[in-house]
Each structure stands twice: as C-alpha cells, then as structure tokens.
Image 1 (cartoon, helix red, strand yellow):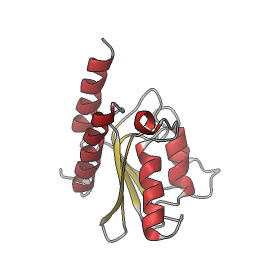
Image 2 (cartoon, one colour):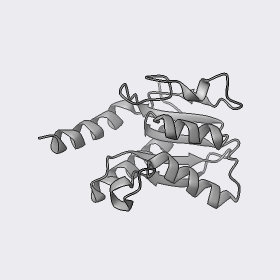
Image 3 (cartoon, one colour):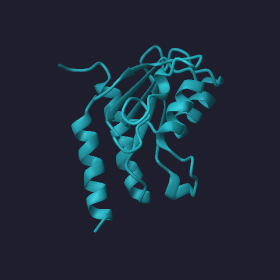
Length: 152
C-alpha cells in the first residue's frame, strides 16, 4: 500500500543524501504545509555547523517558521527519515505540528514510540498524530551504509 507521505519522504531522503557531503549523519526532514506543499527542508548539520542542535528536524522547523512567519506550525507535517530524538520530538510538540511522519525507527534514541514517546505524552498540551515506517527500508539502508563506512 502506498502512503500519501512517500513524495515528501522522498524529498527528506534527498536532504539526507545531501548531508553526506559534509560528513553528517544522513538524516533529512521536510515540513509540509496544510496544502501539501513543502515549505521547508533540513538536514543534519551538526558537523558542518559545529552545532549540537543541528538536527534535520530542528533545521527544518526553524526554516518553516521563518518561511511562514510564525512559530506555530499548526496544520503542518514534519516528515523525517529517522524517528526523532527527545530534542526533536519536543521541538515538534512546541511547534504545534499536526503530525510527525518518519521512516526508520530508532531503538537507541527514538522518542516517538521506540525508547520514549514524547509526542503522545498526555501531560503535554499538544500531541501530534504519528505516521511511522514511510519508506523505512530506504531510510534504514542510507543510515546502515553510512555507519558501515564510519565504524571500520
């Protein structure tokens, strides 16, 4: 079955591949408007920018807020190749995105169901919808290949 989020995930995968040029972990993200238009993109830039918060999701959310002129990204969807960590899941909640769509699960640091479930924590004032596993094989393969070459 085809997901309506595959095209956006394809754009996120393109961003992930672009991160390879700076030796960053290949994770990419896009923010999609309520009209299903990509309004912002992001890729990991921790190495390139020497920024510990330079995760793809944070980069994309900041860019979307600037493009839309508002920090509340209501109705928008965050699409990312890897399950967000606690920082990025928290940023998605704070940005009030309508949904988080991700490809590969992250059993070591995932905070959208794997290790923690920040986005569905009932104590928070906003809980985005979650769609997981979109183009997961492609996302996983990109990460596996990267780490196979960096952990020799």
